[in-house]
Amino acid sequence: MRPKSKSLSPQPSTLNPLPKFLQNQVILVKQTTLQCRGQLLDLSRPVVMGILNVTPDSFFDGGKFAGVDAALRQAEKMLSEGAAILDVGGASSRPGAAEVSEKEELERVVPVVEAIQRHFPKTIVSADTWRAGVAQAAVAAGASIVNDISGGQFDEQMFETVARLEVPYILMHIQGTPATMQQAPHYDDVTLEVLDYFIQKIARLRAMGVKDIVLDPGFGFGKTVEHNYQLLKHLHVFGNTTGLPVLAGISRKSMICKVLKVIPEHALNGTTALHVVALQQGANILRAHDVKEAMEVVRLWEQLEQTGG
Ligand code: YH5
Image (cartoon, rainbow, N blue to C red; front, side, top):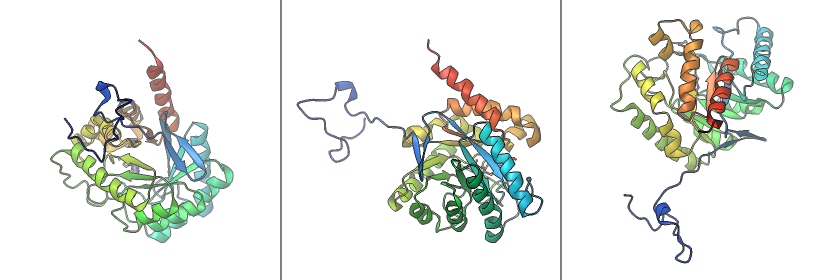
């Protein structure tokens, strides 16, 4: 039983009391939209966020024009396949990836965000960066969501920057840094510790005036295979306890590759299988390399949801 609190729980009037079974119940309203500057993103149905890497180890291997051109082609493909968001990232955060300078990251990300806005003006773009400076420049270039793998821990300016920019913030959990995170991940209870992290950060973000927050347990970021599957199995906890939307970034990650003993290039079928689980566990956004296949999962899952009986 919850202790009765005069100040916190709304008091039903004595003239019109709540039915007995609803008294002392907390009814959590799930947030189903994100205010992406001018555009409202509807999350009452699951959506797919397409991954658009602009790093040299992806397709960004030619000159500046080749990079923008290739990114635009990839953007067009993912939009035609049904992506609701394009996640543009200029610094790989894979385990052990080389650090990219802020200047280099800006030079990769800003022209691509600008080009996407010019060619596909209604597109909702998120900036995958832990740097406040890159987040600010990307939003100035047309991005309308900040996706920070560090939860504000790598750049102390990040939270105030997002508050000032008035854009939604994807709050991801990470233990350690990309350079060290896979050395010896440890938790007593991974789900509880990630939830506790979210609760602390949400309070700080709210106090600074950030309105729209999306929670992401950060699959592969300082987690063993076992930790990742615990988080996937309990994914519903994060949305259910906070009322906030949840993002799952599973696509072609090592939690699939290690179990199936395949390379990321052969991990699409495994990705699809775990996307089904993520939706069943209440995920609102699937961050995916393969938008067409992820959208098929969404459509089939919706059909199942609509089915009575
Ligand atoms: C995420 O989960 N991940 S970058 C290793 C792989 C495959 C893919 C071994 N940014 C996330 O995608 N942002 C990245 O194969 C992210 N959530 C959010 N919000 C890492 C990545 C990857 C790493």
